[in-house]
Image (cartoon, rainbow, N blue to C red; front, side):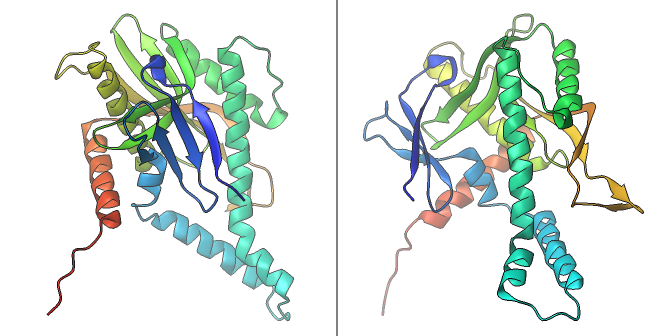
Length: 276
């Protein structure tokens, strides 16, 4: 299966062309066509996910395997049963990812003034989004699914939605999440996006040195699995509510991303060897 290549719109149409490359073997990079040599830089999510160890995710996968083995207790395990046990967590993760993609598409359509069909499962989440939009009614949408990049540090990423607050004169990069919780990695992600956009604006002479005019926000739509006797029933579809929670990226999250970026680069550097 070949790599997937998509030319992306850049935030505020600064720079470009930029091509997003999703690798067949996993991971994502961006080719900065406006930079000499068309360098390929890693995505923000690839940097974070490839550097941080996610203990919660490891435990979740292990629990899937344990439940599958328990269900087969006393039975002879066939090759098919083993495959189902080992891929159960991947199947659930893909189902959750598909829900997230659908929610993103609905929001993008709403931002463009379209009438979007909404499945019953996501109706509460859409009501939550409308509640969030009412809270930040003065923000003006500047684009959705737009790419930001930092030429000097060497990374790029795609922002779910870019807004402008005319009262404060600042831009806000927003990431929509349908995850089980608000995680530090998500705040690192939007902090990296915000820093990249500030760099883009600075080189366009729209900002001066030391000016902070971009912030990052993560918005999560509340959801979870139904519970039976106090235990999550993962065989049932996720249930969304109209509750929304959001959090801001900050300097500490940016510093954490910088550390991940440094580790990512160090892991790719060739080791200079000496022999005796």
